[in-house]
Image (cartoon, rainbow, N blue to C red; front, side, top):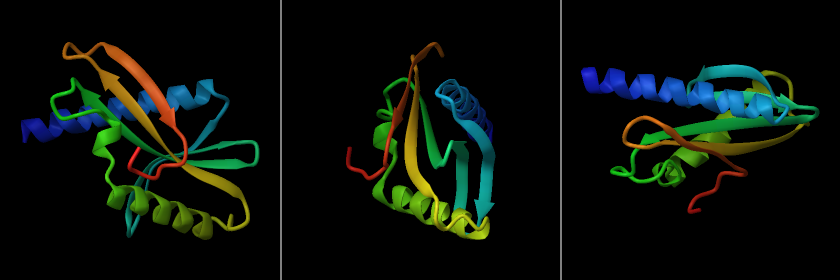
Length: 125
């Protein structure tokens, strides 16, 4: 159980870092951890007329690969499906939108190495 809690804390921390990154880019965070039957969207943000649906991947060290490598095709497709569900549920069917990945990478000691926003998720990268 301790490993699961540690991973959850790391994921929560990465989502906060990603939200700060987006806010620094001029986005407003509209929703965090929005849930529906298909799963959970980490972040929903907006800048002007553009709605952004974000999958955040956080990795400490490279033993399990990079954050980008952890996003498989099935999850990317799930994010796109959830984004469409979100738009429909909120009456936003005719807005401009996209789904991005934000990769948060730390070194082995926990120091932040990078925060990278990758537009239009569609693996493989």
